[in-house]
Amino acid sequence: MQRRDMLTLSAGAALGPLRRANAQGTQLKRLGFLTLAPPAMLRSGPNFRPLVDELRRLGWEDGRNVVFVFPSEQVHAQGFDAAARQLVADKVDVIYCAHEIAASAAQRATKTVPIVAWVSAAVELGFAKSLARPGGNVTGLVGQSYDEQGKVMSLLREIRPGLSRVGVSVIRELRESNTWFEVTAAAGRAAGIHVVPLPPHLSPDHIAPLLEAGVRERVQVLVTGPDPWLNTNEAAWRQISDWAITNRVVTKAPILSRGHAVLAFGAWGEVWRVLAEQLDRVLRGANPAELPFIQPTQFDIVINQRLARAVGWPAPRSVLLQATEVIE
Image 1 (cartoon, rainbow, N blue to C red):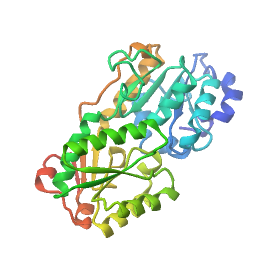
Image 2 (tube, one colour; image 1 turned 90 degrees about the horizontal axis):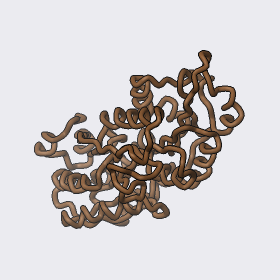
Image 3 (spheres, rainbow, N blue to C red; image 1 turned 30 degrees about the horizontal axis):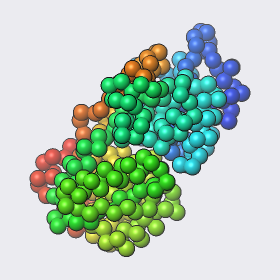
Image 4 (cartoon, rainbow, N blue to C red; image 1 turned 60 degrees about the vertical axis):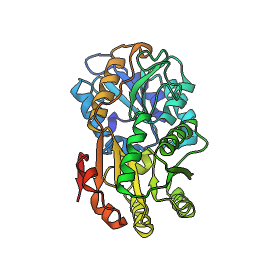
């Protein structure tokens, strides 16, 4: 992806008319990206490249028949509304949202521009009337059904015998994060596990308070939620892992952070194909109101057995046999 093909939100409005068509005069579609990830991670990160590759497979290439519109700087949780409004003003054809926080902001910013979102739930969080017929301007992928939290709790109990207290990082100001916590807590209660809320992990300044709260709450398992900043942040994960080893705490993370925690759970390869196909359909004119949300059918279980041994709770054979990947 060449630098000249990158449009930022600040420059997009001025340069947009000049980039509406390529050398052959073909109308260029404009695909806006709204996510917590820093621009550099968006353009070259391991969690963005698979989507670009899948879009290319379907015939979409940045600068040829589509323009990728990125934020000019990292968008923080409190800045999503302004970034979403700027994307709408920049006349993008579709907004891709990699998280329900972003999807909510985009939904507030427009009721007409199509939104393709990767969310943990669609109906429960108000993005769709039903998965089959969303009924609005949002469609996409339900990355992990809330029903899967029961499976996660089952795996954690096998890894950590006697498990009774799980700490979950929560952004209390956000409806989506609270809903996710409530369902996780319900899954915990069904398994006889007490789930407690912990501070969020949205920046380097948040990691120490999160870990301090984990000690204070005497958690035996630390669960981190989806956050592009944390997904591939090696320094932050080293800090979390060192703490986990010292305190003998099992860590659980989304699949995007696979390898960094004792347990990572979720869909991976199938996600990028589905998201690209949803974007392809909308870019070609499909109506999001009638385009069903897709739920992955294949989930990955990644066990970092090396870290599991270091924290003192190696995964048993019953878990290893279920794993799609084991890191020794």
